[in-house]
Image (cartoon, rainbow, N blue to C red; front, side, top):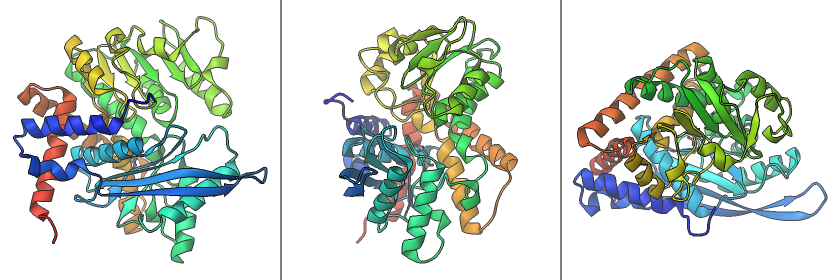
Length: 420
Ligand code: GLU
């Protein structure tokens, strides 16, 4: 991430813009500009070779006015306080736009999961959990997976937190393994929500699905499921990428074969995927590939002032959090490219996290079919609400989503008042 890029500045600019359209005074939304609570921890770990390394970790609660803080934990070398702050704030707006009763939070540890062993990862997770334990809990702040973490990491958090409490507390995180109280459908939920949103925007714009081309950046939990489901729905996926680079076939990639290859080993990267008619391209070229739909599902700051002008897609559906910078957003809007914003498009994960938490609190288990149906109802309804408000106000879909989210949080704050 470039030195001058601070994603939290982007959060502030978006909030200011929505607040001004809503006609709010500064004092109506001043609270939203500041994260409620932040904790920074230094995590000492005995590495497998016996040396001691200290990792930096963070948990930020941006808002708890609509409910407990909610949001993932990221393990990535780029994690810093500004990133975690921005990700926490985006969670507040995401939960508000789809109207699940949560505030927003996020955590992160600055580490490279590709360069540490599984047991080192477990020790980082356990020590980090113990250090943020006073801040989290089913009624306070509920972490979940994000970039670099997964169901196994959530399992270690449940165990560590439960040992500290002296009894099992499965509701402390979501995105857990099913056997530990995880929910059916949670692992696929973000990619499924991205797919539902992509189909909704194509339908709204009267773009037929058959033979519509799509490009997916990122083959992690979000991108791989979105590519799989879009392919199953009849779209032609012409390019995909992972950290090692991208692959391209204008006639359409064999998505099941690619996912099978990637799923076989952690070391299987696209750079080593060789098939007839498949060309290797850089991640940069991938974003500029000719296609109707572009799904950035990797990290922040991917579509920025340097490349926004070169994007050829008609529609962008943001699977990642914050993939488009504010400057890039303006360029895309001027070019007439429709952007379905992250806080709406990738909300499927937190929606099913909410279902998981509700199941945990009620000691119930719902079927996958039930969960997928409920997810679709909320995604469809939220899409319509954002689309309509954007149309009424003649704004982008991002601004539309923020109009709904900022209004919901501000009204909650006004009804609660400021204590004492
Ligand atoms: N990390 C995911 C996100 O950014 C999921 C958060 C959650 O389920 O709490 O939306």
